[in-house]
Length: 630
Image (tube, rainbow, N blue to C red; front, side):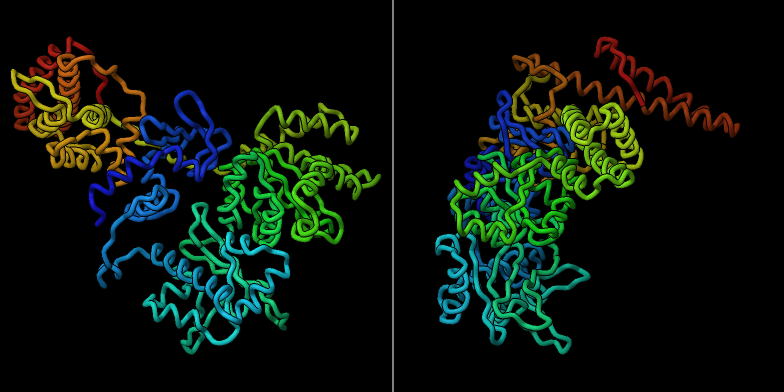
């Protein structure tokens, strides 16, 4: 367990705006910061960070939390691991004790897999820098490709030896379990740095290759790509880590960890195909560059870039394959609301080779002189193929309008319609009608997504409960006077609910009350901080919803008025319960009448005046206010 004082130190040091900024580009809006939510796809930022409150809140999907909760959610890690990551970021030592065999057994699969990858990544680097074979083969290769030593170290490049299976032996000697170093394609457990033959023999997956580790946005090694150095029959140039619980090649971008700050600063990202393209451009001075890793571009990859910028320039080889590759990614970028440019490099050049012979100034000058927006690029390319063939020209126009139709911004769409009409000598009105038709079809055909929403009270009783717990979370420790005695607001609310046997409508409500009762008497207890930084993500998220949400009632300016507010909310929930009981009694009375059950009718009729009397008394206390009931 991490000591309580260390946890408090981490919470105090971790600035929510700094933590989130490692993953999301934020811009100032009043006292808060706003950006695109990393937890759901959105084109207009609704993700709000409050530095003064130390919380984040997405008003689109409902995600909410503190700095620790943010790391837990975005890294899909445990509370303890999130604390460790923040401790490392803020140079706070997090004391740990050696895990027992039983604790090791219970350790989360994902955490174990990250540990294996971290070990393998360091091992590959040691082989590159500290062995004769690594220096003669791997390091020589990187240097021959023109890479400086500082760049090799920055990207943590490595080497996997040719003979035997030394990595498998090192992992087994270290005590790593076989299930985590191999890979089960069905369960996705295991990172697969080691393979397993049919006879049960373990072998190094990446033998005789230079290694390119792939990192998460926060810098954890999540996978590897290994490039072979000697051409061999029936052996692919690259071997990649298999998909697992922590890695999917469609969800990662090579170089994003090293490039994210440069992308945010420049508000621009360059997208290339391979690892060497990224590294060579970075070395030349162009640091805001990432790679799709040789796979077809995917929507998750596009949304990763979108966290940091909406401007992207795609660099492709100047051959037929490069041109058609550019076309395949066009619609996904446009649909995501990007300002997209395309640059085709000279024949025979790729970003790696071009960067080797040109500095950043020359490279950027070439990009600026040769880049074109996707629509114009597609229009020019397809027009050339169509020639004067009327049928092909009609297909061309449909192809281009289909791309324009998915652009989310109406002004941008109209600009492209006007530009395309002029370039293709078409009626702007005709193109507009076609685009509108395509957009209508898209809306009709698109599957409806169920949004993730915050806790919304569904019944009057749930709303009443929510209101009272909002008081506990915000002002629970504040003292008020009740019948001449002084109590905390939290104690009064909880005592009233339990005394009247009003059961919580959600388990998390009960947890909040239990936690308040257990910890409220501790020295220095502040309910808002306690619940905001609670280790249970459900409790923390609920509390932050209550803190971030515009409060239904203005905060009273003294304890007497606060006491009046507490009393009123308690009577409101009592009134709701009484109304529910009266409604239930009336339904039971109707059922008894229908069944001609005279004895049951008499019992119910005898009880009815007591409920009505209780309701009238509560209404008097509330000033005869009318409350909607179930």
